[in-house]
Length: 442
Ligand code: SF4
Image (cartoon, rainbow, N blue to C red; front, top):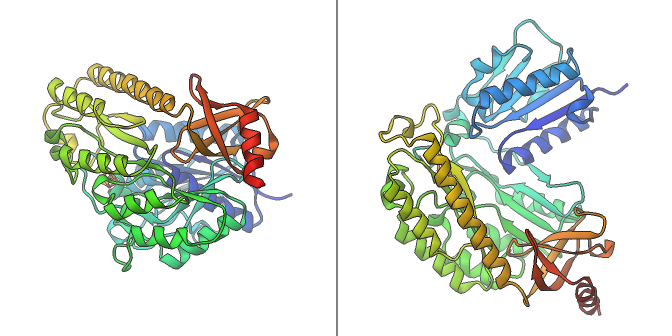
């Protein structure tokens, strides 16, 4: 009987794409990938440090795995493993702890997955991490949208962030490998490729390239596809990238641009590389150059020193910006960061209140944006997901669109006219949808 492996991933899309690549290695080595609850022979837990209570969460997952199979070999890897290998090695049941550099070397480092009394640790010190491993994954198994890793690590020193400690300095996959991996995904039938990394806009540093040149090379690849940028720092969203996006059908009309705070005082404490004026200029420029642009924004509330006035600055700053959704994070203290020892800790209840206020604002803006699409024609990539009688997908500007179920629409770009908005989707009439697909074929 074949050996089996199961995975559990915490954190970001980058981690998910890396887990998927580790999965391919197991398959190549003769393993069957099974569901977590199926009692696998080997469990790989790919951790994150951004998660609150990473330690608690990790323990729970290990216990769950061992309940399913008390003899299972347990490997813990990822950012949390890189930062706290000793703590993890002491958790009962853990067999191997692998750092960020070692997660792709499981078969070289661990011989036969035999349980020992003591767990082993393989972790390269963060400052010595200089390799970058390629990775890609799909969101579902329907071969519609895939995540492609192009970069790892970060040279920035945001005072709240542990990612540079866990993933090391900024490194880029060479251009040729990115293009080959990209072509491979297209050949496998994927229609939307999402470029991921820790600091994607920083791509190319130290290898004589840059993000704009990479985008230009990617859109020259022949084929029926589109490219989405997972997230880009405001100081790296250049005029060139904005113009390229405005002029290429292959680049999604969507930018996710982390802001973190709408108070320049807090941005300075966060050690971000821009102030609110810089941010506003970039967003307004992108918005004015690209029709129907979808803009997503990350914000952190409750950072040390954030007074009510600072928070209201953020709220009012955002209220005036033309964005389409927010990702709101509540600040939480992280060991080994500058922010943890800053004065002015914000009460937890107050942090939650601020978070709620921004979530409500996000909902209002999203609604406005969705309603502004009514009557417009958009190209939608429909996916398998959806109830029996409907089918859903994303437009280039990242709005969710649904229509009546029609299998012919799956994994095709279909021009649709938005007729109305329901709770969470723009809706298009399936007849309109069908006829437009037909006319685009004719
Ligand atoms: S840009 Fe700042 S927040 Fe983002 S990974 Fe780098 S250090 Fe962390």
